[in-house]
Amino acid sequence: MKVTVNGKVAGSKESGCALCGATWGNYYDVICGERLFFCCDLCAKGFKNIVDRSGIENINSIEIKGNYYSGRRCVVSGEGRASSFFIRFSDDAEVSEFREEQFPRKQGHGQSL
Amino acid sequence: MLLCPACYSEYRTWDQVADHMSGLATMSESAHVMWLNRNLSKEELSKNELGQRLSEMFSNEGSLLEWARNAVIRKIYSGPHPLILAMQKPTREDLLGYVIEHQHFLKNWVRVLSSVIERTDRNDVIKYELENITTEFLGCSGPSHFELLMRMGESLGMRKEEIQSIGPLPSTTKAIGEWREISFKMGWQETMGAMHSLELIADRGISSYGAKMHYFNVKILSSNDYPKEVKRFLGEGYSADTYHSSEALSLVEKYAGSRQSVQVAIIKSLDAVSSYFNARLERAAMLR
Ligand SMILES: [Zn+2]
Ligand SMILES: [Zn+2]
Image: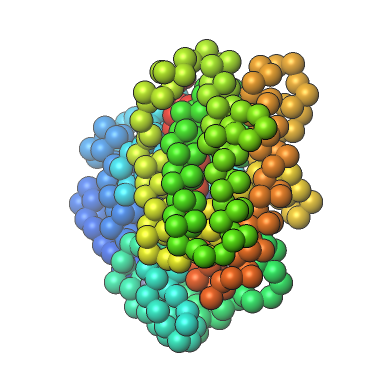
């Protein structure tokens, strides 16, 4: 499973947290059979919400663009299809806003998480 | 005395603060990791670098007002926050989202400022906060800010009773919780700094200090596309907040025991307001 965050490969301590791209922390979680690096448990929880909302079990790739403030546009691909959506998390990584989008739209203004 | 900006633990030197934060970040403690991610750097820093960056961030140079204004610009305007973008051409839903969530913000505003009055023995502070609370909630020579907010909601087609029957979204509740925590855990000076630095966000002069845009598109005030109640509400804030915040922050500066603890509270407050801004966007999306 290939994970990209704001255009950069992520998911290891070197490349950064699979949700936000940060390199702080040492939190690992096995998701869809893969051991991924996260800066903290909240990012892991957010990432699992993205996986769940995609409705795809055998995921090939996840592209995430955005941050905590702007919300995130995600494209999850696998099983010969792709699921695109906008998702925003609350401070405790619950889904506070979600809508499916036909095509991944250009991402707005991002700054750090 | 220096405070950890994430958990308020007390230390004597920046190296000790950095040691503490670094240690907790290594253990992936979320409050510290998130604070570092959102306020300092997403790249892991060595303890030395972290100590250095913290001491620069909480600098003693210039006035507290200047420091707070820079913090607002960095936090809210450098992205800018998506709410600021939405406020450049707000839809009916954006403005109703404002009305619904802001009623809870305003109620909390006066409650927290009352706690400043309860704890201070300074006449100028008591007078200042009483005036502020009166303007926001009761009205002085005209209707209160709260009443103008309700009128804005009604002009957009929602009855006052309906507006007031809607509770806050979780992101607003979370933000309110943060402000209440500041007032419970910190002194009245920190509380005052945390609350009134928020008024800098809508400061008319913010763009002349480096913000890319104003809190809302000022052309709205003379546009025919918005009801007069919308223009009145936005216009009142536009003319009031400059005076509010600069006066308040100079009072805080005059009476603060520790400048750094006020700075910690201001950053906490800007994190909280970012969450509250998200709630307004979420509410607008629900109304669409
Ligand atoms: Zn993360
Ligand atoms: Zn701490």
